[in-house]
Length: 290
Ligand code: SAM
Image (spheres, rainbow, N blue to C red):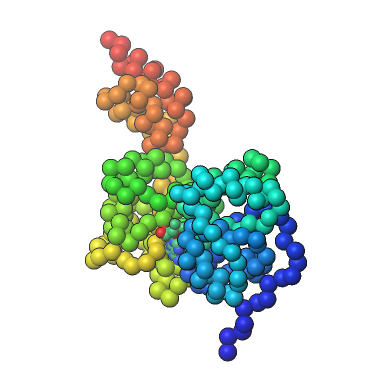
């Protein structure tokens, strides 16, 4: 028989804004502290009140729930700040995972902090970190970049900005866009190792690892169902030598002026732009001499 949900603590909750993480699939990932806060809060703010109501009922919690999202932020924020200033305990949840991580709440937290009101973290699940933890990709440095732009042009430009960053990239994606996004990733980032983590903590959890070219083939048959995180390994960590930089600058100078060439090579090789610009001027001077 399943044990009953744990009883919330009776310890009083300090006044303030609580940022409460909730499960990303498996309801047993709820933390005891999240239950305490939701049970003791004067008000629970949620992007979707029906989703929040289901969550609360799963833990036998009764709380007053009101909508708060990016559309209601402008008029709701002043009221919420007033209530916090009056000493209320207000909890913010999102549909799943950690609020503010590709979810509403940034403006509210910023405004509360600026007003000197207490903001407390109630940490717990987040798809980004859950996916990183099982990915098998380097975890010492990572960059969470949220959702990719839906259209290929802006998506490739976005990926080009990420290309020189020496860190594991973590991206949220939807099933219908996965194939196109993987193709753009391979085109812009090269055939790096990558991971597609799907339906984490749920019944159909799958983690597919391999070079982007393999993942493109794996997901060519049709869009996968469910929620997806894509992770991409850092680009080759080879440190560019002076000779590499000179060769790249010489090539870029055949198409562009020194400033543009320096910017391009700095991005591609992860080198200092100012030093490259000086070198580009030297190289150009050499080339211009009879
Ligand atoms: N705030 C949430 C968090 O901390 O993970 C993310 C909210 S964002 C609107 C929703 C996206 O998170 C989904 O489109 C998917 O990319 C990712 N996601 C959420 N739950 C997931 C799961 N169980 N497995 C894989 N990805 C998930």
